[in-house]
Length: 166
Image (cartoon, rainbow, N blue to C red; front, side, top):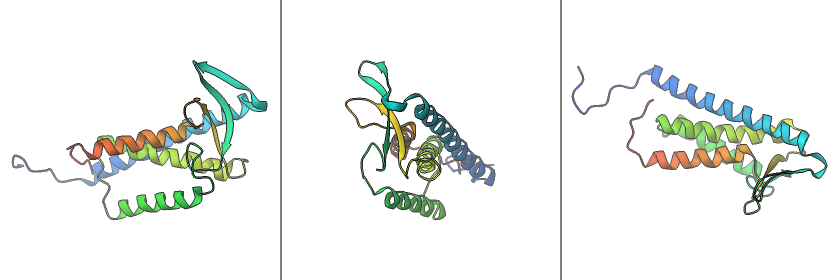
């Protein structure tokens, strides 16, 4: 019987379920990101612009920066650093997976993989497909949005006192 106030032991099944959740979230993010980029490359050719609401529009652009058109030419360096940091956190068990952080890590990972797929597998000269164009913000894609939302979830969940699931 467990004493009041003590943490139950973490089982291997819980850790496995947490990482499956990360991978599933990342996979869904990549699938949605890549399908919307394929749609954009077909629907927004020859300078076509689709007005959504107000001043929000869809317009096809290509970005060789990191995110939101920033960091031109720095993408390989920053991607390598980010992946390295994630690997170190996993190896050293510094990444405490909770219900919310699973979603955050999955979104960040999915967004990074989505943009990396553009650079490696699309015929874009190593550039990322961007198409969401609000006039008050740089043009971006769903992978960029996943990275930002995932990072915000991780920051928010870091301040919560939630039991680790791994």
